[in-house]
Amino acid sequence: AKLRRYDEGGSIAVGIAGSTERDYRSQAASFEVSRNEADGNRTWVAGVAAAADRIDSVNGVATGERRRTLEFQFGVTQVWNADVVVTSSVSWAHGNGYYSDPYKPLDTRPRSRDVVAWLTRVVRNLPGSGAVARLAYRYQHDSFGASGHTVEAEFVQPLAGEWTLSPRLRYYTQHAADFYRDPVFPQGYHPGSYYTADTRLSAFGAFTPGLAIEKRLAGGWSVDARIEFYRQ
Image: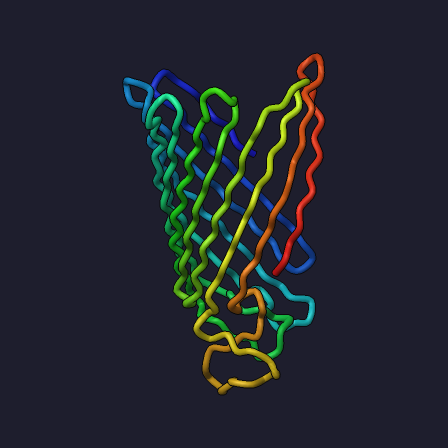
């Protein structure tokens, strides 16, 4: 849930979140401030969020384990000219507590984690055609040694009869965490050292082309369909 209040200079928002599973509970809160410059061409955004998690695995490996996370974000949106808008933001998160996977044998990870992420988006209107091009790049690095790059591109083309066609493409690549070891299990394991065979922390890439089509209807309604192909 989030409540946002607007004024002439920008907005203030507060939010809360909760999640409950059989073996995991999480509570979070956030606060965000955005301010517009006098000419309306630039908006600054700053935010902070905190989360508290409790882990109680059903196999008894992790009972009453906790994790605390604090995250800060700062960003700016700039109207570059009549046809281009650029948004860029950077975030930093620090967490302490239980990060291991209790359902994976011998999985042992550091009890603290720092994550830095940088995101930039460019939206360009193409005069004459009514089309819009969107391009985004995201970089993330954490203290586990894993880093990732994401590139997304989308082209939105209006067609006759209130139809819109939007081809899109997403590419992701990731370097493995310092303590990730490939199969055969437990290859590379040394007692007392950090170790994981979790493939989510391995080196991998993903390629996702897609196509969306939308039809605007009377009364403000619309209907859309999307097809995507995902290869990892």
